[in-house]
Picture 1: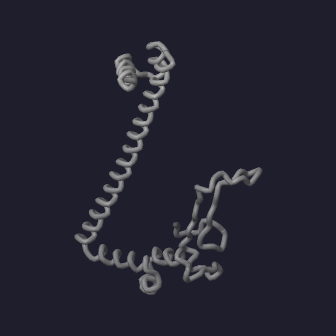
Picture 2: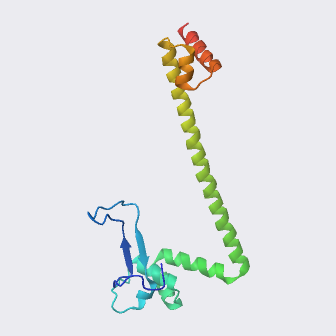
Picture 3: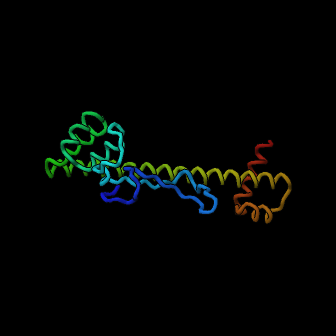
Length: 172
């Protein structure tokens, strides 16, 4: 979002993608660049839908109090944001409390993401370990010698002996 004109287009919101010049092949659907041009809110030549939530949010961000009062009655999300803005802007303590709460929420989200990643990595390691053990079991059952099993699996001699013992105990 910018408060100056980026494009010559008579649009509030311009969306761009990455294309190959010669073929117009779109590189990805994941990446888009949006220009929301606040200055164009006041350009009479730029058409806009007053009920479009994007236009409402742009007007909210632009900060005209009378417009915000009207928007907050039309849009529940803007009303929530406006109420929150009024609370945190009243005094320093309320603002600090809000910032502390938001920091705690961000920290918690970060911890959850990190725990999820750690869990994924642990699962991958466990899966790889099970796969390595299965390879070792297959090589043992095929009669491969110790040095070949060590080279193929990366396991050490003691680990391979334990696997051999488990296989023998399972047979009996």
